[in-house]
Amino acid sequence: MRKKQKTTPSPPRRTNATVEESDLFDGLPDDLVVFILCKVSSSASSPSDLISILFTCKRLNRLAVHPLVLSKASPKALAIRAKNWSESAHRFLKLCVNSGNIEASYTLGMIRFYCLQNRGSGASLMAKAAIKTHAPALYSLAVIQFNGSGGSKNDKNLKAGVALCARAAFLGHVDALRELGHCLQDGYGVRQNVAEGRRLLVQANTRELASVLRARSASPDPSVSGSGCLLSDFGCDVTEPETHPVNTFLKEWFGSGCDGSSGLRMCSHVGCGRPETRPHEFRRCSVCGAVNYCSRGCQALDWKLRHKMECVPMEQWLDDNNGGDNGGVGGGEEVGEQN
Image (cartoon, rainbow, N blue to C red):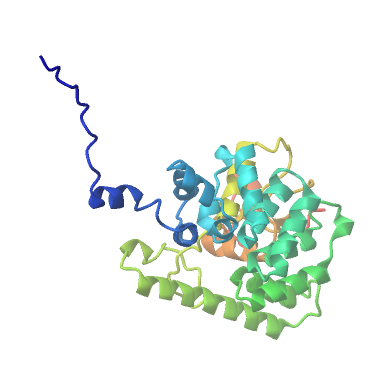
């Protein structure tokens, strides 16, 4: 009697469609994947857009940290929150800096200078970005020179501050243009020229107004229509300028007390966040003495935003607390150095 031979079932045949479906991504060349990741990196709205890619697969984890991808990372992709700061976040920013991302150079420079109190390294990174015509870095270096930040009062270099402001203003930085106008009006670090200073201030307000009108015409969102505050000298309702992510980081860091400093104040302009690097570094309002600013530009903008409605002379504040009546409320834009 003949024995039946055992037959093993043959594996299912892979059709062409199955092969194409499984190898579609693996078949893409690295150059094309890097190109796509560069687009994602440059348009990312938050760091999580990049971080989520790292956890997708081993190939994307490797290509997402390609120098070309990191060099294209947008400011919002680098917008790390102060509460999420860690050594891994520090390493990520350093990778972006080493890849040639000038926005990362500016961001890490500001964090090191003001938050980590590594003044030399922070200033060096900001200078690296400034050399590549990064306007916010030029303006931040100007503020450091005006205040002698990281050193003593004798380390102020007003002429260098004016020169850096002029370069940033030439590149279209509105705050630098406003700061330069006040310097010319007051003769601060430069020969006084009231007419030229006033012209630059009007130009700053014109650019401010034009940028907001362009944003309104381009966005159908009704929330962009206005903020209820007359920021422009032309009597128009202009929305408050968007705060740079690193300024938001400084506000959160200094406000949470992560730096461990005591007795140091933060710039009173809500969109700034710069802290003092020594006691009495910033100027105080000469009328009320209740607010302080790192620059004339911050003071002028905060005056329009908020302080104009709040500024009360110190004498009247004391009289009101004592039940007296000293007449009308005063306000002023001048700031007097405290040190």
